[in-house]
Length: 54
Image (cartoon, rainbow, N blue to C red; front, side, top):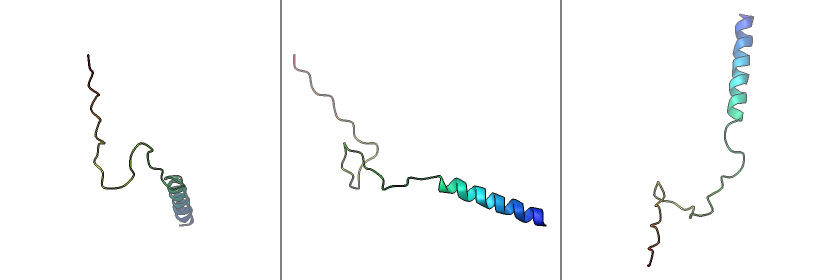
């Protein structure tokens, strides 16, 4: 019974350690080239190529 409790505690510590390593620690940064407000379309619209004058 004692071995089961030790294994359970070690499993709990491993799960907590793994979950604490996930995610970003600071405020997320918005891309510099787009307006970070919502709603926005996904995927971002691709600009049309500039017409060439000959």
